[in-house]
Length: 210
Image (cartoon, rainbow, N blue to C red; front, side, top):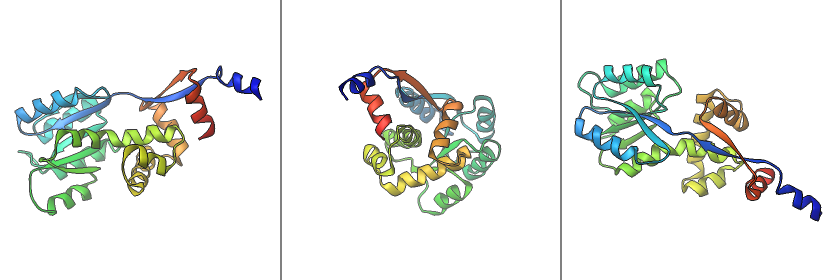
């Protein structure tokens, strides 16, 4: 038993490492764009690849830069935000869209959700909440790659188990995956997750006994 335990420390293990989340910001106000880009780019795991102030500019930027996440202001000068969301998702269904609005009431939220957006926030929320929303789905996938169950993921991200189930359901649908393991494999192949080989004993223990 002792020799077997000693041998474990020399076996290779892996950890899932996310690449930087590529963000496109869409907002009609230049100062808002600049402030958002500055704050998001301070995050080690995120980068703003482009900014757009109109729906047409946003469509062009999505085609050119293929962002992972679009931070979308629903009040644009040239088209309703929900229409833009539909057009983006029609051509790029794997893109995640976080809708932002300063409008009051639930009607616009319902329209945005019906259009397929994956998150909905008020402009009044702090930028840290926006960052958390952008990051959360990738974090769920990363924790799943480690073999964590829903309760473990929920505990580590401080969210409800039902929220985790919703995220995983969305991930399976967007990646066209059969199950969680298949989703991790697809994510690795597409560069959403990277396997980083290490000799760390604790990492091996976690993956071996998850």
